[in-house]
Image 1 (cartoon, rainbow, N blue to C red):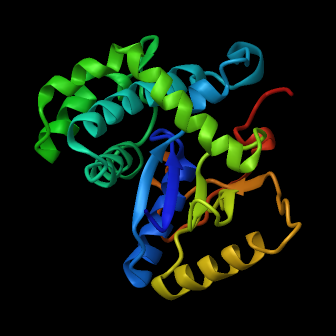
Image 2: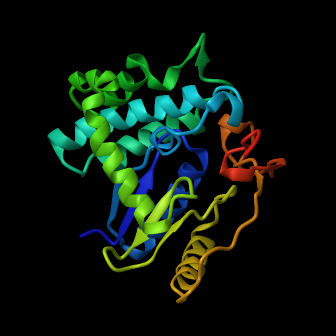
Image 3: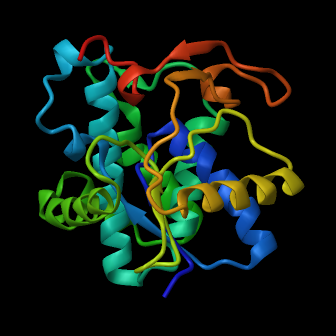
Length: 240
């Protein structure tokens, strides 16, 4: 069993930032991480996107679900081991090498065969997994893991969700970070987060003001500090 279950949606920038931090901790603590699925599109299935979210969110969340279908197809055929590399390849392309919008007409490029085909080719995985983009047969599996994650934290959360030392260990949403800590600070932050989250009766420590993350996709250099915005509801919702 893994030391950490990390539930991610590949299009969530804050999940990506947190995953980079967890990888720093993993390298120093020799943790085994199981990269698992949580879909923002399925989590928000009951939401009217037009009235609750900024433009492009529905297309972006749908692209995330389509990428998770491909991940589920890869996992079903090749096991869990490729999930680390698959998520890393997605995140690098989405957040580290791209800037500006991913919208092409009325759809999000991240959910296309061209985008995911390049990832599969890079990782040496069969191209037939591209077909999973449109295969809703994987949605039950993704929904199951989404529900699994939410059962650990409650439903008023986003991504990522981390479960440390499952099945009995502590689970929590986040932490949401906009800057990547140094190697030493990464371990210190980890110990503080686990210590706080493990305290009996602890529920929440939160603020909705967030800096834009230090990612090229947000136009923020690693040496800069992003502009602070109010992400009320966790995703800059335009109304409750």
